[in-house]
Length: 207
Image (cartoon, rainbow, N blue to C red):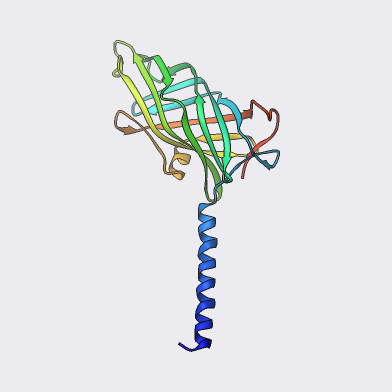
């Protein structure tokens, strides 16, 4: 190969490598937590809840009037991470007149969480989800059975309303899934959020 051909080849190779680097950076880029438009540089605790959230096991929907959470967040290498440390559930009922909720609660906390982008939107993905539900009722098909809800759940982040929405569409977009009794279940809820430690009343966004 002569000098001119070598030079052209090298320029083409370097251009290709640079383009690959750009695509790789773009593919690995993840959203970060921000307060008042500035990237979070330390840890913060955020809290909130859904006024109403429901989980639907095939044939039975369990709805909780108060579905709360507490999440410690931080950015690592400009990637938003978190740990869900508390998730109390109150005033839970079922869609069946013969089934009641005897006990319900989050298990094996904390659950890790991370931010991710599925173009064009940002999502939070909660991993290692584990909720135990024990139903009661003489005529309830699940009476006395401890039902374990497990898996991973992705929720859509809405900066304008400072909310995370979980439903069938958001789980599908993030390729996440919750299961119980060997079947996929539906989870829906819109969770409001606010800082509870150092940045109270500051706008929380993800970008």
